[in-house]
Image 1 (cartoon, rainbow, N blue to C red):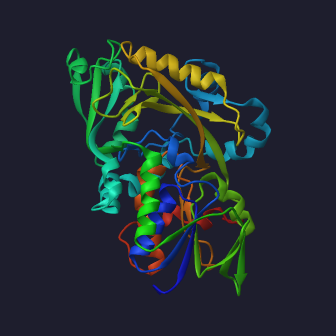
Image 2 (cartoon, rainbow, N blue to C red):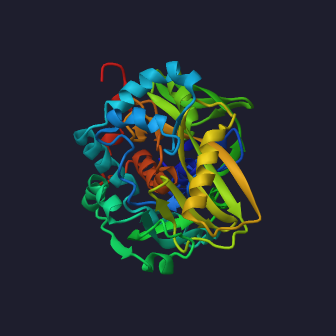
Length: 416
């Protein structure tokens, strides 16, 4: 019933979206976060509303290729070797999905969450101050040549099945379309109906302000545990005291895992350490966001510069930045953008929540009244508003035409 009080844990893009849609449905909503809104993974992502991001990392052949990737200093995959013993159980589960059948199944699930991303962000923000951050655009995949594009045939087949087919720009026309690109790029595969966020941190901050303007609350508090009465959540315990509620939504990224353990569910989820560099006050920006396939990173034109993001490192939640990923990102950016000059730059490290099957957890935990909305891996910003709307519909008892079975959180219950 709309008179119920819902606590949403985690003020990133998923939590903020969930809270806004719940409040619009008439619920009393309190959003909690141990830090400032939008300052986790939602702050440091590539900023792209990448509706075509339906291809999981665990594609066919990854197991065979991984040793060569790790040994290649020019490939953006890194490991903090001291963490490997803790990583192995998750890694075994993760790599078990590196086959065509699982890849297609995961891709279909991802399409549900991200396929209409631009429209979902627009629906969330229409008529509000947050709308200024949402930009419509093309999204380009930059390749050295046609042969390199053809080598990605399986990924493009999955994108085609999800409704995304590119148009091509080749040869000298590449630099006419995107002057920031050097001669190493001779082909752009361009997708329409995408978008990007001019400043992800400010965007989520404005969404939380919007929540408060429509009657919701934001409280900075670190959630420690849940209080259950008769098997149903009745309160959350925080470092500032107990907050009573009728239902709760857990949307706190990698920090959702220990909260799930409080409720008896062990989720095979690891922190994928992601890096970005913002080149501030640049002389050139991309006209549209792009994926630089030769370096496996994205470049996005933002209000504060060009953000380059996309390096992957496994090594837990240590706050120490590794030098090698950032060094590679700088080198690849220089190779792709040889004429780029800038006044200063900013480095960032954050933690993507990576479930072992690359699909987020969206749904109710048993019949506890606790709903999950986390584990979005690389698609958090892209899929946040859709996830928030799905969770709000679940709580309200509204029917959805979306197939949400792939996101069932109890798929990780013992015996499943």
